Structure formats: structure tokens, C-alpha cells
Amino acid sequence: MTETSTLVRHAELFYVQAGYGPDLIWGHGLTQTRANEESLGLLDWSGIAARVLRYDARGHGLSQSTPELAGYSWEELARDQLALADHLDIDHYIAAGASMGCGTALHAAVLAPHRVARLVLVIPPTGWETRAVQADQWLTTARVIESKGVEPIIAAMEETAPPDPFADNAEWRDRQAAATRSWDPKRLALVLAGATTANLPDREQIKSITVPSLILAWTGDPIHPVSTAEELAELLPDASLYLASTAAELATWTDRVAAFVAT
Image (cartoon, rainbow, N blue to C red; front, side):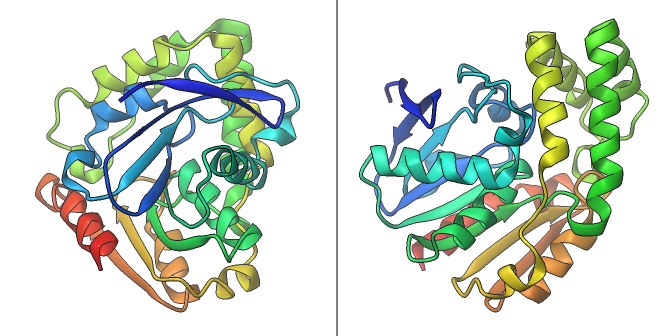
């Protein structure tokens, strides 16, 4: 598995591609990277029979930051994803991702319905009417980082309960703190401010997505509320939803994705 990069829509994006089977493009969450996302243990890619492309989104990890906030909307990140697929001669693929990556996948399916064969939507984020409150929180967080650095944010995170599947995981906060400290504060503030421009496709657009969709959500996380996952399951014509409230339920996600990809 060799890491490489290419210029995509005026930003250099770093990516890795590995495995055999149908093409699957995975988008990570906001403030995550290919490197630190692995510590969360959401999915074991070795257990999924697919040719998986994972990349650092614009402004994240090794990939280049760009100054325009609108470039970090999920629609624009979907355009990045489709352009990266073009570069790698990937015509049809399974669009998959967590949080921001989930939003990216949905927009990709709206922008290029003939190219997205299936959707894997993991921990869908706030959307539609609930997005404004979250956007205000991201902007406030960005301003704190700009003025005081990341330590006040880490202190606030330590007072926040983790999602239910991580309730008994003593390492959760340490991993989150380490991931936050790994960022250049200016870059982190930029992507958080950029996230204020993001939202899910409108409901009518989502209703038009006819491909099979697997939705995996967890409980106890207001940034990724169950209500979004449930509404997506109602809107998408061919969707299956599974909720995880425990570590054991979370551990089934790799097998669920593997079965969905193999179907």
C-alpha cells in the first residue's frame, strides 16, 4: 500500500488504495485524517472485500489547505472525490464515509448518480434544520482556537460524554486529545470554519437516490444524532439502518459493511 498524491481542483490530495473487489471510496470525518481515524476502530478494512481508496480530504492530514471556506462544504468535497475518482479511472464505485464523509457521499450520489453504485453512510451528522446550531458551535470553536489554541477545546472535550459505544473505553478522550494536538491550529480553525458552509442535500434530492444504502449510526452523540440517521432511512428508497449503543454492537459494523459490499 503506497501513499501518493495528486492535484485535485487546485488542492493536492494524499491517498492510499488497497484491496481487491469493487471500488469503494471512503471519506473520513471532520478534523479526522486517514492516520488518526484508524485509532477509532470503526471498520477493519482487511475484513472487507473491496478495492478501498482512502484519502485525506481538502485541508485535512497531509492534503493541502485552501483559503475559501466554501471549498469545505460537503458538496465541494464531493466534487473533490469525483475528480479524484476520475484521476484514478474509477467509473462506478461505492461511496462511503463517516460524518463529513457521509455528507460527501450523499452529495456525490446527487451530483453523479450514474457513478455511485451503493452508499455506506456511517454516523450521519447534523443536517437540514439542525445544522445551524452545529455550525454556530464549529464557528465558536474555530474562533477559540484562533485566539487561544487547542488546549481550551481539549479541556471542554474532556467534560463531554463520549458516544455510547465508547462509554467504557478509557482511551477515548486520550485519543481525541492526541488527534486534536496533532493539528496545526490555523489549519484546524480553517476547516472548522469551513464546516459552517456544509449541509446535507435537500430532502427531495435524497429521495431521488435509488441505490442500496447501508446506514450505521451510534447513540449518545448530539453531533451525530440518531434523528438524522432515521430520517435518511425514511428518505432513501432502499436503505437499511443499524444502531450501535454498545461496543459489541459497534464491533458488528465491519461484518455488516462486508456483507453489504458482497451482495
